[in-house]
Picture 1 (tube, one colour):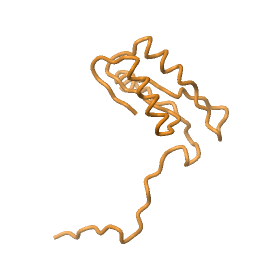
Picture 2: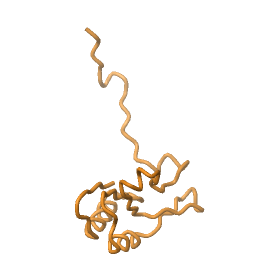
Picture 3: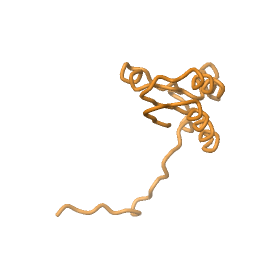
Picture 4: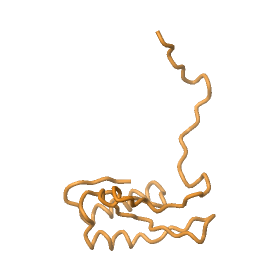
Length: 105
């Protein structure tokens, strides 16, 4: 996910696509204060559509551009809900005893 304010442009979407490729992310979200330009929309569309392996009837844009206004109006990120746990990267588990919580004084 990338969040930008000020002047936004197509190059920022291209950068997000490169980051997604490097991180092997299926969906990327670009959040901005400004409305996206037409070149930004075209760049996002060129990323294609993500179809989850376990839900082939669902399709989601691989790159999504949302403005703060849209988010405040209730828009959200389109992603597979109810998908397999592998959809999201998991934090590593810690075993008991690896860290100790300090007691209250």
